[in-house]
Length: 172
Image (cartoon, rainbow, N blue to C red; front, side, top):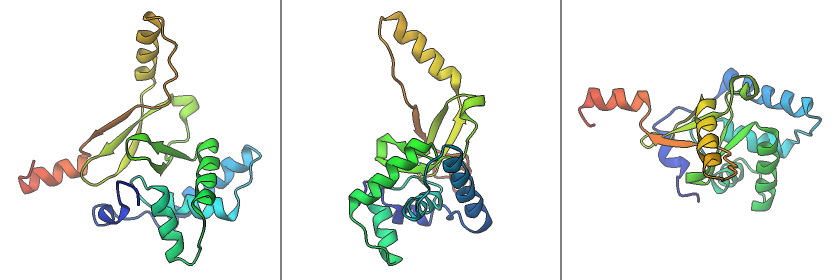
């Protein structure tokens, strides 16, 4: 199991399902086709498990979910699918949790790189355009003679929904 078990987050945030999930899967299929890549059945199954959660999910959680649905796989099969999904840009890796989440902003080229906002309470993950953060990191690093290779910036904290809930419950 990953350090952040999806079971504990299930009650905190509703799963992505129905038409919304179908739209996300179709968008991934289109991205694979546009890049002349194969969106195999296994890649789609792995992507569906990742995209159906509002948070990040670990590889072994994906394996467990697929197993419950009758698909038994070796971990390497899931990791290979994850690698293909990462390469295509339809998922991202949340380094701090060694877990993956579906990209919900596919305009990175036009709006710049995002930072990842990870809620410590409910486990939700969102992306916010923040090219300026990366530009600043690059400038500061280069002033020091360092050649940066920043791939992401991750910020943990409390999402607006959990903050409202805490205010309402008086449990900051």
